Length: 258
Image (cartoon, rainbow, N blue to C red; front, side, top):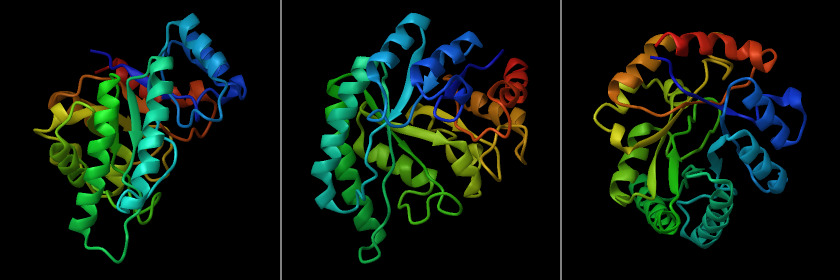
């Protein structure tokens, strides 16, 4: 059984130029019709919308812009404004998942208090998103290498927040790269919780490069996630060490063999 893959066009198919629509077309020309982006405010949405439509491609995820400290209740109004904006763009582009993290923690508040404040923001955001057929996907981000200070740096805390919100407007984006950087494994973190996982992203350790260039046994990890019940595409959010198609070869071969 081959595995579907989703390519992040912020990092891949850069050879096609700066226009995201051109990258969508390049990805589709090479057999990848599920794509992901980060920001939307820096893109020509008309071109992107046309490229998605003309290639029949799906925009799988995009970010809620503005990295805010959700543990500070003063940021919640701004966060909800960002959610509304992201939902509107997502609806226009046919995207059903918008990504957020918790933001950094506050040294003067107990962690449990901060957790509760973040959950309040996520609950309000999930209500807005669900009303428009969109799901906020909460991403676990590692603090060891890439995102020092992030409050929700473990999968367990993200899952706890998703459960507390209890809304179809909020699910987990399980980023296996960040999880593995934190010393976690899928079997420990998402076993029995796959109903709360809406998307999975991958990149190799230690340098967030393409699968096959680092220390992770991706055939084993991907098989494990499938056996745990994940049925969606695997998001390729890595920094390629070579051109896009060469970098995709190893994971393509692994995916085709599973």
